[in-house]
Length: 303
Image (cartoon, rainbow, N blue to C red; front, top):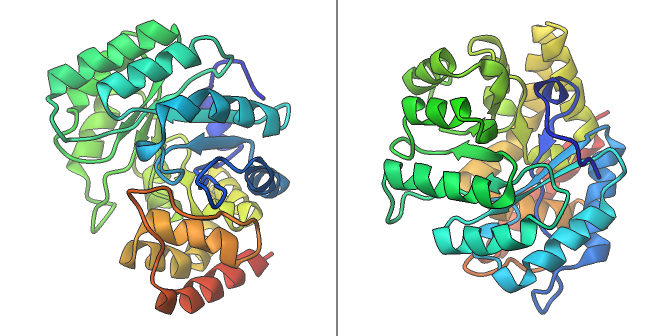
């Protein structure tokens, strides 16, 4: 596992995969199937993985956190970057900090929430977490009103942020006043597009973000890597063509539920048995399985 600090240059060589977390029928972590997922992702050339929302760490037990970190350390290839998430509650993230500070993970991501929080309170909590683990953390901006561009820039200037994962969904990603303000105040090389392949081309060209995260990369990592390479090499027509190939599965994720559909897609395309969803989530309706299976298998088969 990579233990050195995350660099902006890494984002031009690897998509940041955001995989689901496989569990046994009793909801315990399943090492064998999580290893299958990681080997599949690494096999497509991806060397950065982030365990956050798609892994449903929002509802994970603090008591299993040490086991999770040990598993991620063990199943990663030597050069693979593993980024676990913490929180979103302050007490949860600080308990997790006690576990993380004894490990070699170069960073961790603070899960966002707008429940019972203020921006000054968030910034204080983020500082406390970074001070506790003694390494910068990933700032995940998912909604308006979570943190202002000015607040994010302050955390970056103070050396508290490894990078920013930007994931506010827009009907038209070319029109984004918040992101325009953010890249004006923070070096865009420190900002990663955080909503998959669909807005990545716009985010990396118009707004100069350094790279992108993806859930569907877990189904076809090699294809997503080709899209990243096309953007970096300014072959935008090729990148646009690849983007459309991810859209059928992404449309199902947007139409049903992004976390739940990706979880099922991993199982239905025979990558690994992802197992049951950790409550407070549940599986998708049986009537959706055929559509998810068809979209996932079609995407997985593309070379």
